[in-house]
Amino acid sequence: MTDAIEPRILIVDDARDIREPLGQYLRRSGFRIRLAADAAEARRAVEDEPVHLAILDVMMPGEDGLSLCRDLVRNRRLPVILLTARAAQEDRVEGLDLGADDYVTKPFDPRELLARIHAVLRRVPPERPAPPQSRRRFAGLVHDPGRAAVTLPSGQEVALTSGENRLLALLLDHPGQVLSRMRLLDLLSGREARAYDRAVDNTVSRLRHKIEPDPRAPRLIVTEWGGGYRLAADVEPPA
Image (cartoon, rainbow, N blue to C red):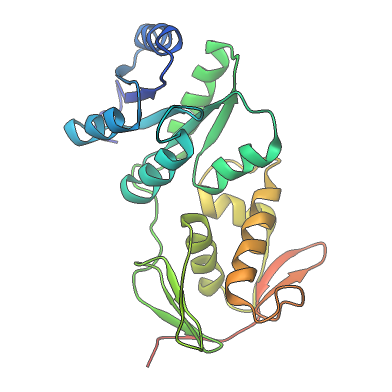
């Protein structure tokens, strides 16, 4: 981190009565703060100066926080905490699958958010490890992590989300090995393992639908009951 004493935090929320008091509270807690009312303003902020962590409201007019989260994680490798009024687990899982490091449900206690900020800054390295940029072939498919895509044996190219791209890269790094849900979650996000293993299951399910001939009877990403997942294919550089 370029400035370990006073990390810079970006707060993105269209509600002024949340954005500004939260900014004041975090300034008093020793952070430098940049405020933004929408995704466009947030992007200008990260272009202007380094940011160490972003706090994003999910429900914003125009581009929502999940879309902004995807962009900041994929293109900036920026740690993200989501603020969400949604209680459904599917919405929380979606944010975590996009690469968010944590979430806080509104209304929230600023002290809890402060504790989560400190936890994320402690456990997220200055630069997140990126998937390898070289393409790899497995079972007639080619994974291009730099483009976040898989070319099928038919020649069709399938786009991957950032979570699917990282998950496939990890499985290709460990062909034939059983990787537990908790280990995959920890490797995928860099955060402490907690009760979010369903995020891994959901990402595996979506990835199977994109690369398996029959996702209901998967032969490439195999479930090891009580263990986790295993890539049942040899991996080699493409010809």
